[in-house]
Image 1 (cartoon, rainbow, N blue to C red):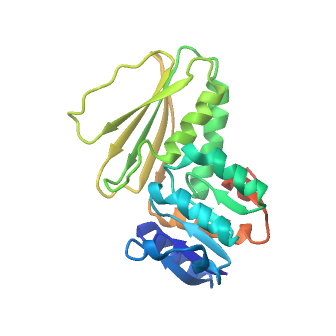
Image 2: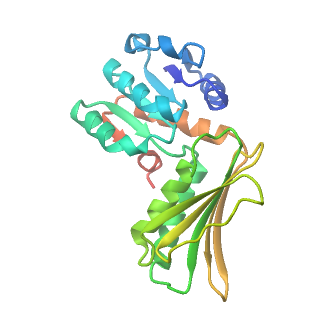
Length: 247
């Protein structure tokens, strides 16, 4: 495949390494230095684009790929408030797109486990539930896209929670927040050199239940994104990693 990398930071470089190792070709890269030059015509020799850019650039990048009729794999988060509009354009124009808040195969299995546990705990009123996510200090959005996927899965099943409240923690002196009984807490911690750590915790006065995913490097995300790009070729529509992994 001939691939365009939309975003050439740490994730873009990890994708490049995986793609080249699998025999693919990187024919175009968008970085901070040349982002203003990126136009739909820039994608004329591209089979698929992979976007790990910035939240404020993601929607524009998606629309440029649609205009160029280039399939897109997007791992950038922080743009999902415009998801309905993007989905509508993708389907109406018969475009091709895979989106995910996390392309790691392990995380998507973790999502499946979270759905199952949420369904089992839905009527257990003695347990309170919260999510904790830890990322490197360079991460721009909070809560993480992965944490938001987890919370939405829980809220879809819970009889007791119908909204969430986020709390960003940079140090131990960060003041605590009061919660209403119907609110689910997401604690977002920013620590140097942490790739990604997510916990879902159910606690009662008697015991606790916890599931956790630990990302040991960025290459799990990159490998999943390249897998998604390979899978997307020749397809039309909007997909997620659940479709690719048959979860």
